[in-house]
Image (tube, rainbow, N blue to C red; front, side, top):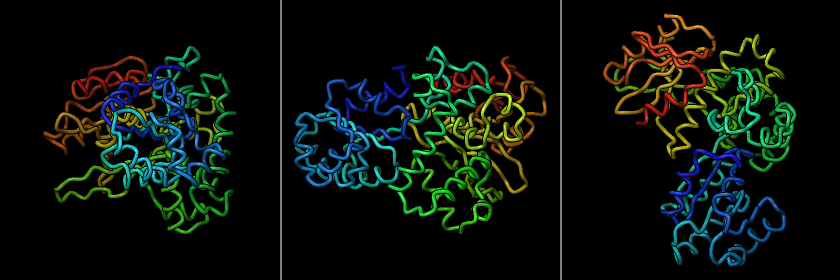
Length: 392
C-alpha cells in the first residue's frame, strides 16, 4: 500500500478519541488504509449480508464479538449501530478502539452526530492527490494523463485501464449505491443527470438549466445533486461572502472530486481527445480545486475554501483562507505564461485589499515557475509545494 497523506492525522485522532470515523467515496482506499494502520483490530465489513443482518437485528450481540474494539467498515449499512456503540464507548472510552468507515456522508454522519458527538473524530479520505499518485511506479507523468486517469487507487495498484475501471465504478454506483440511498426510480435518467453534471464542472450551479436538460423538475435536480454530494462524487464550492454591500454571486460552483470520472462521463478516453476537448480548461480548473481540497482534508481541515464571483462577472477560481486572509488561486490550462492570465485575480486582490494574502497565484499547465511583479505562476505539478508554503 502506498503512503496516504491523511495517515498521520488518522493515527493522531486514534490516540485521542475512543472512535475515529473515516468517510469518503467508494474505492478511495478507506478500508485498505485502516487495516494497514490498525492491523491488530478485528475487521467487520457490513457490506457482507450476514454481518449486516447481525448488526441490524442484534446490535448488542454484534458489538459483543469485539471486546477490544474493531474496524467497522461501511457502517452506514447498520444505521442504529452508533447508538449501541455509544454505550460501549461510555463504558470504556479507551482511545482508538473503534475505527468506523463509510461511503455515504449524510447517512453515516447523521447517525454519528446523534450518538457519538464528542466521542469520535471525523476525517475524509478522497481519491489520491497528485503527490500521493506519484508514489506509484506506474503513475502518469503528463498533465493530460493525470486529468484523464484521476486518482482512484485501484487503477494504479492493479494496473487496470482507467476507462475500464471507471466504467465499472459508474455502473456499480448507479445500480447499487443510488438504490440504497434514494428512491431513484429511473436509473437511466439519473445517469444522464450525472453526465450533465460532468459537463457543468467548474460552473456555478443552475438548477433550472440542468433540470430542463435532464427532463426533470427543479426539486428533483436539487435532490439528485445533493445525492451526488452525499456520496462524495462531487462537491459544491461555496461563494466568498462579505459584509459589504458589493453584489456577489450566492450560488455555489460545482466541482467533481475526481477528474478521471469527469473525463469518462464526458466520453473522453485518451489524452489526445482531452487535449482538444472544449472542456479541458474546466476539467483543469476542477483538478486544481480538488487538489486544494485534498491538501486541506488530508490535514484534517474541511472548510476555508471558496470562490469569488460578483455580478459583473469578475471571478477567481479559489480563495483559500489562511494566515488571517485569503490566498487567491486562478487555474489556466495553457502551458505558456502571459501577463493577462492574472488580470482577473489581480482585480479580486484589489477588492479584498488587506485580506489578500500575498500576490495571486496562477496555476498553469506548464512546467517552469515564474515570479512576476504582481503574481506568481505556479506549474501544475508544483501546486502542492505552493500549498505547503502557505501552511508554514
